[in-house]
Length: 166
Image (tube, rainbow, N blue to C red; front, side, top):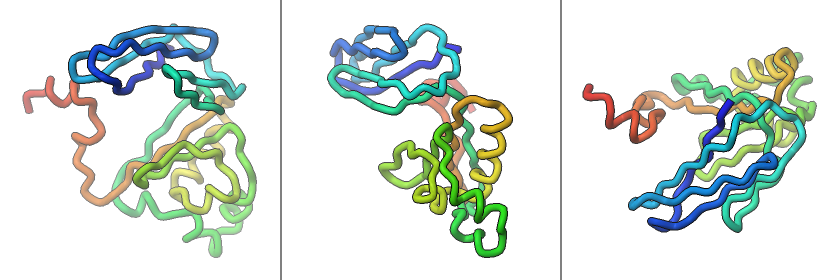
């Protein structure tokens, strides 16, 4: 499917995005927002490089991303449950090269699921994610968006929010 890539730059700045053998150019609007639309991509477990202008992001996979949201209990980390759950404890000591985790911390980045990163991840999402990745057979990103009272507007693009009169 098409997987848009977006960001910000100086208003009117030309931006070139290179990924998966494609190169797409676009221009930032008057507020500095830009969006590039590579041709359809297929799930791919081979780490690739994404280049945006002169910035390079290594180890990019193409697959599914699942967001787990809800109340604060959705965010309880794996480390809080391993003592009472031997299956979770064993799973948390493995490395999963096709699973990426993103917590809701400020400045969070995608991290490979491994014994150093898994203990800090949502126990519910990790318990859901590692068998799901095995079942669907494509790279999987799992992202936490759980906190008590999260307003739904934060999960919408500005365009979506503004186009809904309610």
